[in-house]
Amino acid sequence: MKRSPRNMLGEDLAKMLKGGVIMDVVNAKQAKIAEAAGACAVMALERVPSDIRRDGGVARMSDPALIKEIQNAVSIPVMAKVRIGHSAEARILEALAVDFIDESEVLTPADPFDHIEKSGFRTPFVCGATTLGEALRRIAEGAAMIRTKGEAGTGNVVEAVRHLKMIAREIASLQTMSPAALQKWATAERVSVDLVKRVRTAKRLPVVTFVAGGIATPSDAALVMELGAEGVFVGSGIFKSANPAKTAAAIVQATIHFLDGVKLAEVSSGLGKPMVGLEIAQLAMTMQERGRTM
Amino acid sequence: MLAGILAFQGDVAEHAAVLRTLHVPFQEVRTLADLAPVTHLIIPGGESTVMGRFLILSGIGKEMTKRVKQGALSIFGTCAGAILLARKVKGKNAPASYALIDMTVERNSYGTQAQSFSANIAVKGIAKPISMAFIRAPKILWTGRGVEVMASHKGNPVIVRQGNIWASTCHPEVNGNVELHALWLRQAGMPAPHLK
Image (cartoon, rainbow over all chains, first blue to last red; front, side, top):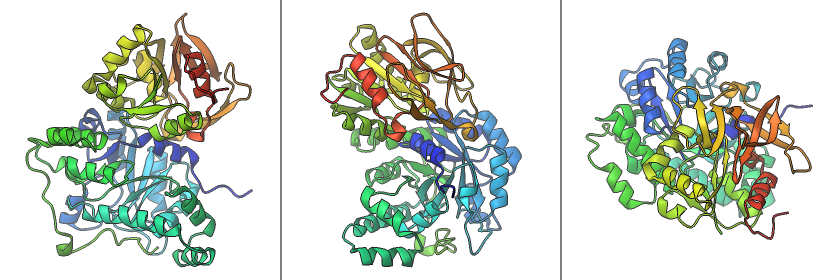
């Protein structure tokens, strides 16, 4: 019998994360700050995306010792990143018993042709996507959760909004396609027509969908929640801000009370300087292109 | 009567789908004002640290405890919800809990996601076993005399009740099973034509 590519327990864990904020942390101290502020999970990595962007060089999976340190510090789920296509890094993270693996464009891709065949792992994967086709290719490989790519490390939310809306618009466009057009779309996107039909019927992706890439303020988090995100990843936005603990707590508040203007005004007040933002058109390198056509 | 789902974080939508199937009216609860008309509250699966923090910040934790003591509120907690209802919580960085069920619970007792599993659970009062997921689940290590064990798995209670306060360490809602919710609502006096 052919094993289902779906990681049902991983999809269920993703459901438990909904409505929450997953925060990038680079050490145990930051992980504790994130947990105390109300993060629903932490993403362990060596450098936050804005530092990766500034420093350049090849960005890889974190040192396992660092990940263990973070696992020991907190009680919430711990995620960690591997390079696109780097199944050996994923095997290491699985051995460390991380709760989720992020096959991430923020790190330097390891394979120019293929993503990791995720169905071979017990540990669930979250993958980035910019379009519906890209999201479905990752789900077909076994991803248990999808996040938008946005443009990490910029503090600029525009690309995350673009990707969230692109996916929503493409799902809406499936509704009016003829069977032949649906087949043609599925072939062009290299995904099975059955998966496309599932999306058309459900009017949503079959897995939990978070927004990531460029969220820097509480109001950014509230914006993407209003647009239909099921939760948010915040990278550089917290620990590159003037007051990380306060900013972290405020972003959690804003994610929960995303339609409450009074609450948003209250939590946005007096946070100090947010991270520096970058204009997308002036970037030397965009991370969202990595793995996009694969 | 009105059901409510604590909607700070977690699998709120899955519980909402169950209540819709059962045709039980409900609203999401994020503030004291939201809680006021609610007679039957669900605390969903999610992170107990997050919900614990917001139960304090919102004042809902104190208010729900008061209303339970007055006999004006019934609660069903799944996973994180079970932790928050316990008298005692073991494990690092545990949130403050509300002692509404006389039990000791250990968080992430089976381990990380690598130890998550699903199992068929036979529940007292439900004809067939229900397939349920245990996601980074807590374990009920001890229950007091006033606590009725509704289901066990490998020697540990997994679904318990103390009067109208129910707790489950596993998730009937993620597979869309409605029977456990129906059983709780029925026993906790919620009139609804679609409850068996």
